[in-house]
Amino acid sequence: MALLEVEDLVVEFPTRRGRLVAVDRVSFSIEAGEVLGMVGESGAGKSLTGMAIIGLLEPPGRIAGGAIRFEGRRIDDLPPEAMRRIRGRKIGAIFQDPLTSLNPLYTIGRQLEETIRTHLDLDARAARARAIALLREVGIPAPERRIDAWPHELSGGMRQRVVIALALAAEPALVVADEPTTALDVSIQAQIVQLLKRLCREHGTAVLLVTHDMGVIAETADRVAVMYAGRLVELGPVEAVIRRPRHPYTRGLMGAIPRIGAGKGRLVQIEGAMPRLDAIPPGCAFHPRCPRAVERCRLERPELAPVGPAHAAACWRLEPEPTG
Image (tube, rainbow, N blue to C red):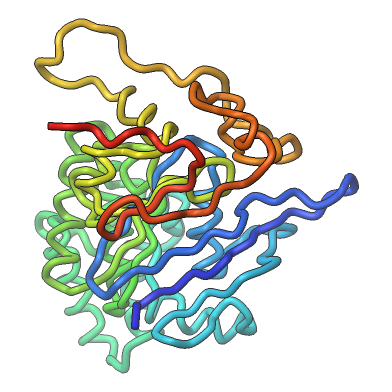
């Protein structure tokens, strides 16, 4: 049984003009210790999927269909207090901007110690010792001194390391990481990616890594889920999706990444833009931008179908599998 199972998840926003569907019948699973990367353009529904899993959808957003099961137990219909006990203890979260995740009025030590004591049966001395050990583990130098620092006294990269320590404080089985490297410069991004990989390997923690950066996915994930306009369009092992993308949208994403030694040819450009929530076309949502679209694409929505070992794509006219 998978650690996390998401089945036909629907997230909607009621408005005066009707309901806007932001996540549309999305299904996937994550095994214990696995890193699943979720990638797509801004507005694809990646972050909303992550927020739905940890029960932090901003009203009026709501789960309107489907089911989320964690360790075999359904969690999408739990009361807020029951979900709060799972969040932090069983499911950790890392957000894009560490400043919004840390309380500026408390030292990082107090925030870590409160989280540890909320979820683990430790006294104050043991909680402080664990907080120092966590700061050391995530690569913060002189943790005995830094534990009494305020968030504004740390750099962006150091603050993000503190957020990772907070997410791991109660040794959760799953961490939802929403764009954890976007607010950081490139050299710090690489350090955070390596840190996440090492911590997952050493703790056996599963990770849902939400990002728009295919480079981060390639470096970190075991499998990748590609989202477009609230729908999953491709799902499979990261090697297969990156080297042999089968959906035209995934092919476009991969073609837009510059490669060292690939000459000075033009990068692939996906014409147009992702549709607004109130203007998602019928059929395949990608068809207005797709060079391979036919009449069926405009009328019928394709579902994920197998295209290789543990690899699926939702397309009526799949890209031919690359050779070589």
